[in-house]
Image (tube, rainbow, N blue to C red; front, side, top):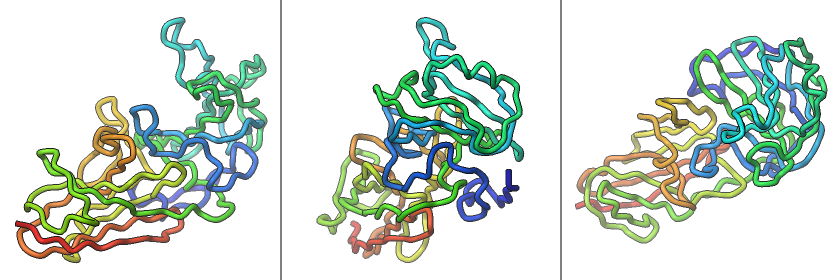
Length: 285
């Protein structure tokens, strides 16, 4: 595996060399069933879920740490990963290949060294994939106790999906909400800004500016685990109820809007650094 040089977890996507190969055939950006960091059944997804049933191969050289089965947790607590293979790599990295079929072939991989491209099995419906026979793939940074969006570590094929900034809504501590596209007057104070989320596209970062000053940057390419919850990082850690308080809303950042005339700028960026922005003029009382 190629060495990864990272100045900090938050800038991972901008600082690395491609470290892994794809665990399935090359896949473009618009063909995933579920994207990393999306709202997925009341949690922030730490996986990339592929959309096609296919053969699965090791994404890089390493050693098989464990082979899980769909009843690894017992009759009442089935593994959410279903049948899975976990591989340890250099640089304190692990890859997880979940929702595999129920073939007994995986037994032969226990505690075995593998190379990039080693066949691991076929996808199945052993995990909690709502009947989808698709690979659920995770990359874990063991040292930093974080999950990394697999796409930032792999070669890229095809065009990126276009990000949108629609129906930006400001919600204050009282739960009062204002659509900034229509509401030009509001009370000064602390607000969380949300955009209308997209089903098949995810930003890798969001930035919010108030009067030209950057007040928050959220990273959606690295997730942390804090107190048993998966969170994304900004000025503070945000759990799923913060990032996705209801269907159709995704957190952009938290801001303090002072009294007087203000310009609120929102920026969303993709994996290649391409950014889209919108500016709102707000009068705060």
